Length: 418
Image 1 (cartoon, one colour):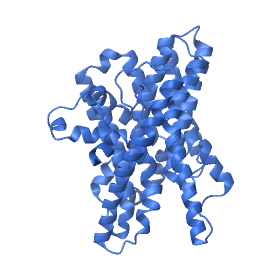
Image 2 (tube, rainbow, N blue to C red; image 1 turned 30 degrees about the horizontal axis):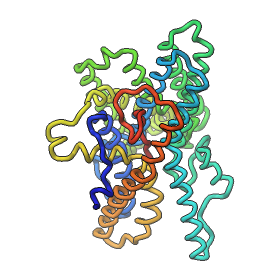
Image 3 (tube, rainbow, N blue to C red; image 1 turned 45 degrees about the horizontal axis):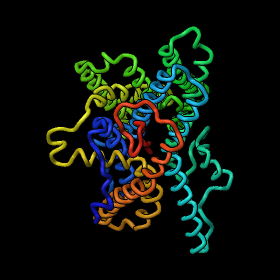
Image 4 (cartoon, helix red, strand yellow; image 1 turned 90 degrees about the horizontal axis):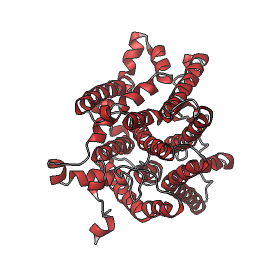
């Protein structure tokens, strides 16, 4: 009975296993970082944590690769970019992301109000004007996200990217289709978003004194519209240069380079190494780097991992024999639900209400946290996210696809990170 309750009936042969690995790794890194909150003073840090890539940035790149692939294939198949293509693209994206988000958001609001009513205290929700912004992904449009449901900063960046990228492509097509090929128009669109966002950050970084720190650019929409574009660049390479994309030797070399640069970049931006920047007197240079060039470096380095992982089509050997593949695919499928549930709903509203009175209690809280995240995310995915996502097949046209890496749907689109 329990097996039936939690089984997702996954068909592994219809998925790209390497992309499932990337998504599973991304969400596990994010949830692992949040799990340490439960340890309080008993968390002494682990050096290997400083070598882990940013799970959110990995989500951005993977999302850009899959969404960009859908957009490019749709554009090429139709031979033009028009209103129908745009609305269909948005309809399918929003059916994938919005229902889960609004369910959890409204649930958190209701929980805060009920708790305040029962305790007789004032609720802890942000003021109405701020709370209203969450329904339109404006909570971190031009400033840091408020404390309430703070992890949604990354979803807001994705949603605005889903709006702006196809609009830029439509504009480019309208202006340039008589002079340039669709391939060149796609490339110009990607470069326009990447270069435009980086120029904005660079100008802002120069104008604002270094003493004000990193400026929180990581979580501000207008400063991160390039976040998924590095993955879209990988999708461009796959579609227009298939021979190079499927070259095994090139894939392996790119993967090694990408992995090394990603790990080095993660370490260079970690808390562990900050003290050395201070001692060497180069902290101002580091702050400027984190405001500007860090984002394209981490985005491009992770994009180099994609060709190899995209070529890892199926799980073989021990991956399949010991059930590892099925576990990875399960985590990949429920990753969006994990993203929405793990921090504010589970960690802050449940686990953190248990006093951390000893080392043993601290680690029991970590175990409880992981258990609740995996169980509740599975249930949310199976009984709400997947059925709602499947509704879009009745309300929108199917998009040209390759292998499926999205639950219960035809388009290979990921969930998001925290």
